[in-house]
Length: 494
Image (cartoon, rainbow, N blue to C red; front, side, top):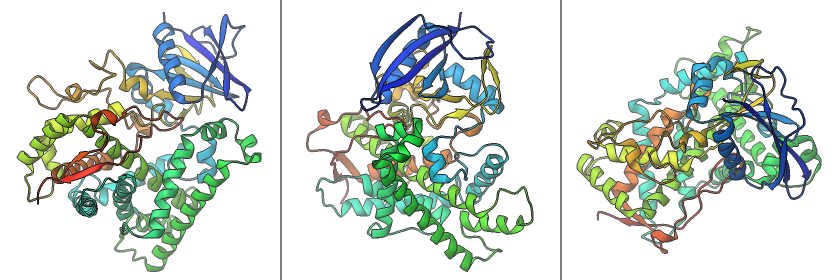
């Protein structure tokens, strides 16, 4: 019989980040999560999220898929496995649309914008953002062409290395970020633009901070961390530079705006802001514009570029898979033209590899926390108001009953017996339901078009050979960041 488990975590040794953990059973329908005396306890040292994920994953096999965890003073419900996550985010989606007020994100967005908002603010901004991104080409031919052009720029820049080993991190960040810049700012930036490179470095460093122990501590003890010296203050200073850049671009748009001919996301938002300036309940105002653009810039750059970087490591690790993809690309795209999204339906193996890369990478293993905006009844349990909710995406992407070989890289997970592409409902790297990633369609386009362009032009390797590549990312509190390698891009055609 399924039961709700309480996994209580208190920090009795702050500097070593040690945890005292206890587990208790609660009855179904219990209106309170305050536990009776725990039947057993143990101590553990949790420096990274992989141990947390492992513990909750293992406990769910014994006690069921709904676990309650106390991280410092914060009560958290963890949902484990495809069935529980789907039931919550899709079948009972209206109850789980709340977004957790993560202290770091609340601080950098000042509570505004799409990512961290709830209620009417979230509904208005999400509806507008989805509509505007579609109008400017997300999933349409125009965006296809923008990514093709950026892919050609990326290939040309890599060719200029003349086969010398290089770290692809900034090339990929430039290319992916430029796609977002075209949508949001209506322009792209040179790979040599020093100001642009500084902004990309700030984005990379911000995600790295969120994925560090200090980032974890800030989200658990924000008031204490505000008083202490450390990297958190540097991280906030970097984000402020990003905000200043965005505000400068908004000012440029205000000065040159033609309401009859919007150029990009900012123009469309400014038009809506003007139309609703006398509406007291509107969410179309300057603060939401700044923070939503910041959301798009941060989320649209680092996660996609990191996934492409991880993909290159996978293909170096498994050269036969790289060769099979190149054979399929040569047969469908050929040497003379750029790939299009129409090609994907004729390239089942390539499509399967890209889906498996996202499954195996597991880039945001704990998702972005949801939040109980009211008491929620779920599977007979009461989740009290103000509880953080973690849909454990790791447990979905690695669930043994949903995948034949969940702990191995295996493109056959997405191919049927005839070699045709088949989807798996547990393939939800962008989460699911009403709070799923707003840029999912764009990210999938970028992954396909960039990687096909790169494999069409180059064969990738590294000086240490395939055995030197470690695919296990660095687990973190927020994202699984791939390890950095200097790679070699050998041109396939002269």
